[in-house]
Amino acid sequence: MGLGILDIVLLTLSIMSSAAIGIYYGIKGRKSTPLEYLLGGKSMKPLPLAMSMMVGTVSAITIMGNAGEMYAHGTQMWMMDLGIVLGLVIVAKVFIPIMYPLDMVSLYQYVEKRFKSKWLRQATVVLQLLGGYFFIGFLLFPPSVALQAFTPLPSYANIFIVGATCTLYSAVGGVKAVVYADVLQSLVMIAGVLAIVIQGSMYAGGLDMVWDIAYHNDRIELLNFNLDPYQHHSFWLCIILGFFFTLGTFGVNQSQTQRYFSTGSIAQAQWVLYYAAIGMVFLRGLINLSGLVIYAYFKDCDPLTENDPHKDPAYVLIPYVKMVLTKIPGLSGLFVAAIYAAVLSSVSTQLNSMTALLWEDFLKVLPIFSDWSEVKIGGLQKVIVFATGTLGTALGFLVSQLQSFLTTLFAINGALSGPLIGLFLVAVYLPWVTYKGASAGFIVSIILNMWIAIGQVTLPKRALLPSSRSGCNTNPAVEMFIADDPFNVTATDNVFNLTTVAIDTMQMEDTKHPVYGLSYCLNSLWGTLFCIVVSVIVTAITGSNTPEDVDEKLIAPGSWVLFQRSLVLQAKEFFREKILRRESSTRGGNKQKDEELEIKDPLNNSLELKEPKDDDIESRGAV
Image 1: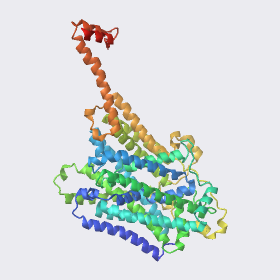
Image 2 (image 1 turned 30 degrees about the vertical axis):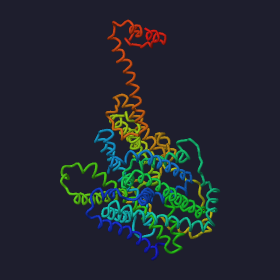
Image 3 (image 1 turned 90 degrees about the vertical axis):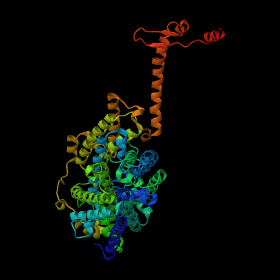
Image 4 (image 1 turned 180 degrees about the horizontal axis):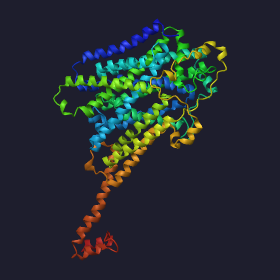
């Protein structure tokens, strides 16, 4: 039940096409400037950039993880898409009009401009780089597991192959190669997921039967409005997860902001996000539906239960593909190609953006590069891509030791992105906050958020929804397949074998801090709130900005108006109590003025202006 000849042909064509695009743009742009290599000369069209943005975030983790989530925990996480759409609109309307006109390559140049602090800019870059390297490791692991099930190669060999492929064409072609390869890969991904949905729904008797089976087995849950923050998912938790995931990914993350920086205007940059929102809802919807289709097929013979109760539900895709799609030549190859396309697009996006950060924020200012030609700098950027890809591949081996990688990824990503979101919101909406307050808030939020995330990762996995094996005796093919260990990834296969020990839940509840049990969906929210609150408190203690300290174009217009209005009120108060009092006190010989100005000084020598009466004004006019 491995790959047939047609499957191998389709997979090979997919990979070779991506490599060919990279080589083409590498040859075409061999003398390109750094701006062309990183931003495509700021002349790229919104639609291909939107498709690149879509597949840059809908990765192999999404295909395998979301399908497994629907299979094992139900459909509540589907509501995350509402939060994603809301977040994309906010980014388009708030962040882009401020960030795009600044003509930046690195998004974090904004931090330095706003707070006049180079070290704070570099701190944000370091945090982004750490998250990016770790994310590459996550991106490489799921496809290596899928490929291991269809090829004789072990998972670590597949990690190396996929990582090397991504690194090669990303380094050669630059951002144009990445974007146009993403366009091709998005089509492959859609075709691969459609193959699962169509073939599976045919087995079940139609999509209506798939939904009916899921409904009667408690998989359909969309409107759980429970406010308990300790539950796995709810409507509110998923909205928060999607909203802050979007702010962290499309608002304050170099890998995606670099996409809309590559367009020619603010309006085009906004359309990139609008197109991406449509594509993401469609593709993520297909992926979520595929999880229900797989459940309908395995409803009476769960392949996860007996083989390994601690196995990640995302692996359920593998036995399904091997048992269902291999019956039709080419479909299993299409699925593997979709997984490959997903990881190629996501990793290449990360490599390109991290190269931009390393060059713009650290290397460009060094004296050694001051007299380098643009062509020579372009060559150096290719070397940086190779080095970044190598390190990311190494981290892929480390990530292979983790269980429940979708939840773990969201937990860690939320912990890292929350402080960044908070810092940017402070910068955009709170102009009176100084660099001291922002720095304190940023550091404190990182420490607190990482404490929470690390504690969450050490907790045991949440229980899956009930599943059945009562029908395995009527389907000997499934039973035999499960007995043969279809996942072919056990604890002994791990490269480093860090830990695979199951921990008793009651014991964990007794020994771990209760904050660890909070839903991982809230991690970004906590980081954002920590950063904002600490920034405001520290600024209140150490002193705030004035309009002379802040550039108006770096602030949201509404916040700037409020900032100015509060200062105008302060100026009026100062004028009335200081200037008018001084003028009136110098006119002591004028009895008429003395009558109008009544001095009251029982405790604090303050002055109070006494308005003249209308009768007095009329009588004076007559005189």
